[in-house]
Length: 124
Image (cartoon, rainbow, N blue to C red):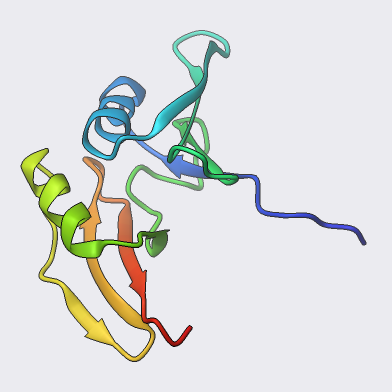
């Protein structure tokens, strides 16, 4: 096998337009694609600026109800600054916690999909 990377993660949402607004305006993700994909559906692919892995906002998988994804991890080099910026954009974050592997905070998107914003310790 010659697998290279995880390319796209499907994030189940109830309203693609609302989710796109959250991910672009609150989190600062860039739109990679936003194309029609049949009646009442779009292929909306987003990513943090410069990231290799992207997400697509999906509504068409019966086995993936909106809000059913948990534990998606974003990495930052300055957790305190990003925490303050996200709060100013209306994102409801948990308190910053410290673990052996780094510092982190958690939040959810409008549908309840769970995210972790993580800053590694310098030893890693």
